[in-house]
Image 1 (tube, rainbow over the protein chains, first blue to last red):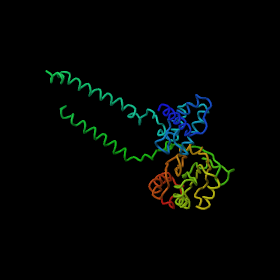
Image 2: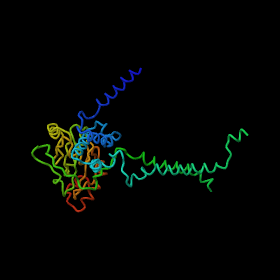
Image 3: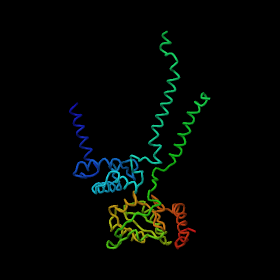
Image 4: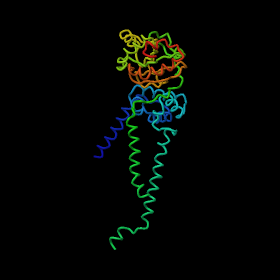
Length: 140
Length: 189
């Protein structure tokens, strides 16, 4: 059973690299290659809506991967690459949206709800503090 | 007071979520606004489809109201809109082509059989200029204003309805100072 599992894992690992979208490794420098891979996994394909350009086989995704490769090769920073793409395709392509006026609610929302939840929790706790515990009541 | 307010809270939350859903679900997820609208058109310089030695550059579009249409012979929807583009061209609308990810022979035979609505078509087999224009596929049509800015971008085929409802009002605005001889023939005022 264990051996079977191992075979399965190895097969899956092999399969995922066999299905990788680019045939060749983008950069021989592992650091650059890592930057390239993490960038293309953060950029949304503008044609296919719910895929990263790393996953999509749309022609435009291939073009964008090529541009990311070119820009990294030119020594551009991750932010410069993202600026390049969002200037052309909009903030839409950034899977990790930047903090600005339109995304403020998105970024701040969870914390606002956390505060609201905390206040409600605190009020409930406080209102029940004076009451005896139900278990004590039934056993007594 | 608090006794009654607490019953109002779930109702208020329901209404708020309802408003978000009502608005959100009515949006078209395919409608991605182009960040280029209102900005100067991206510069480009491409060999033309007809002649590899001739160039079409963005300078050719400066100072006039014109359309830039992204097309390719692999694109089924482009065939769908082609007849109407030819009509627009016959009315005198200047349409510049951006031929995307195509090969020259197919592009030329397409224009020979279906008619050529383009003043010139730039040849972009690798989609280099297309990335600068934020092109996601074909067909896409840009409206370029007299000042060289991108006025509007339409994704999907150009139809008489899109032309009338989206393009003509913007073109009429651009042409208020005169100089668009095609306007009347193309259905505008």
